[in-house]
Image 1 (tube, rainbow, N blue to C red):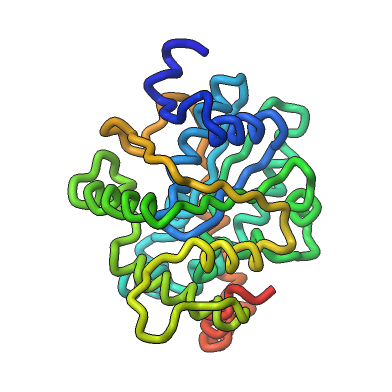
Image 2: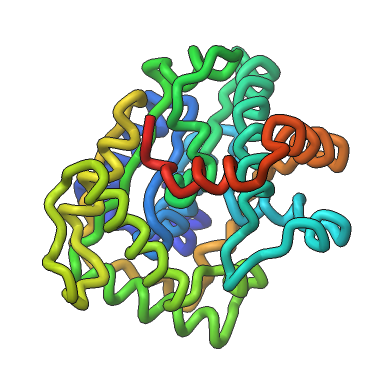
Length: 293
């Protein structure tokens, strides 16, 4: 491994985490990191991308916050504004429609190449949940392939607290503009409440009412494994502190290509949602039941 690799890769080469990421590079063509905000997805995406690049792969990234920004035009924001930091349901659904088309197109265009697609799929609250749901389209067979994996990072309570502290620090003093879009502590609490509602609906044991618990790895994993039941899924348990040495997890010391919808693709996706959901209440109901498949 070259010296240029060392500053960008912080995971110990003798660790199980390194071996798992290395295996993903060697055996998978498409890897999606699923999970709540604040569980280490961005760091793992960063590390897998560097490992893939220095293994000779051409790296393509598909990230929720990046592709979401393509939908944030003045017109769309005026019609479908965020509420308390939560993306409007029409935009979330439109992004999900686009992402399946994007996966199918990428697969077709890069057949036979030494390329890897690394993506982020939050899923909760209908953020790219379409990737987890079976559909009769060109993307479905690709998402079911042996070479496609959904990876669920599950930090311990201690590591989760460390991640949240680091996240708040980066929001207050961003090292990269993307850190400004990281979910705030208030949004993290809202999403945890949403996950508990999902767990209750799925008959997964939850803390007693009135509990101030804001993270439980067992509940979190159980909900996501249930949601990903139609996909090949692996769990990564995070129990070790990893320091980025003051580097942003969004900083990549390597060439890569971001998958972002074009203006026409954004417009077409929004129009498709508006056509299928003339009644916004019907869409909102579906969004609240994102865990149903």
